Length: 220
Image 1 (spheres, rainbow, N blue to C red):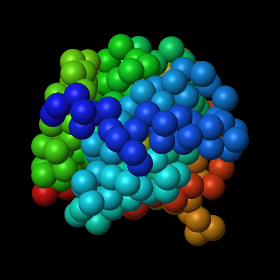
Image 2 (cartoon, one colour):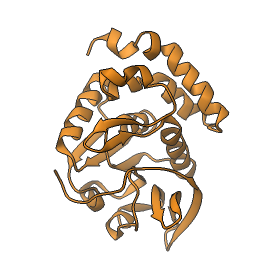
Image 3 (tube, helix red, strand yellow):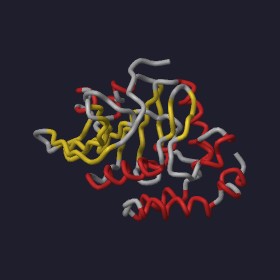
């Protein structure tokens, strides 16, 4: 991908990214590191070109296969919540999707391992990783509920689809002192949860309302 496409123009320019950061700051995102990465990341390359003029609006957008790229506030907030808990040198993301969240994490963590059940989405995300020149992201086509145990344990785990319950397989891959951030579906709606591994137990902290596509198992 050429430099001009990455930099953007007009509605996809750096000015548009800066306006987005101002909106996120107004919504309560306080981490300078997270805001800096959002400002530096060309969200428009992760969506279809027909939707690129909407890339810096604070809303989710379709990416095909019934999936969406999360709204920028949600990406920033989940990243901020994860980084507050631990140094997050090694992070597992469950649900690569467009690849945008993985790219944000990769600019703040040493290593990102990301898994995706839909092969076509993963292939597009991998192209974005190459376009961004990021070499600290490893990806795998697999059922996200299984995580990626071969590379665990992880300082942080982020789940980007709403789960009805937390798989034991993911908890066992969380390092002592680390934390997991995920949307949990309940009868009342979806709530963002942060789970800390204290070394002897897991402590859950309720954060705020969120809206995600439902978590699905298997591969396609």
